[in-house]
Amino acid sequence: MKRICVFAGSSMGVHPEFAAAAEKLGAELAARKLELVYGGSNKGLMGRVADTVLKAGGKAIGVMPTGLIRSERVHTELTEFYEVKTMHERKAKMGELADGFIALPGGYGTFEELFEAVCWGQIGIHDKPIGLLNVNGYYEPLIALVRHAIEAGFIPAKQDELLLLESDPARLLDRMESYTPLKRVKKWCEVEMP
Image (cartoon, rainbow, N blue to C red; front, side):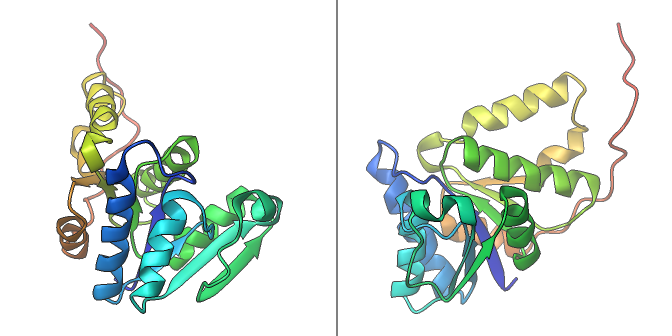
């Protein structure tokens, strides 16, 4: 792995542990010489992880659509910056640049980016590792939802392994570096109804 795409909130959230986790992740990326790919903002957890990477001498690459440049406040110290036209182009560019994905806590945008990366992995568009940094149990309800969908027959059971859940950035990156892509599972299947 050379680059990790990080999805994260454009705000800091209400718990100081969220910002601390963003800093810890940024420091770990820089220590491992892994480049950061992210949404390009200087705000929120997004900005905090980028600031930490850059202060530690690492590289941070931002990708932002033209329409968000004012509202999201572009980080002006980035190693590289890509301006794209749409959110679709943003996600495609981040996915193209990255060798893996990590979601820090965030809201709708983070969820949307995360689930697109998971869906792409599920259907075979990529076989890159996808990690959830589970700060203060933030992603436990999401994992419960995934398990519920498995029990309901909408996600093949083995595909719960598409999401790597850890509360410590170093352990998460270790798991991502040793990740073995899942053997392709037939996505579309008929489930017997009772």
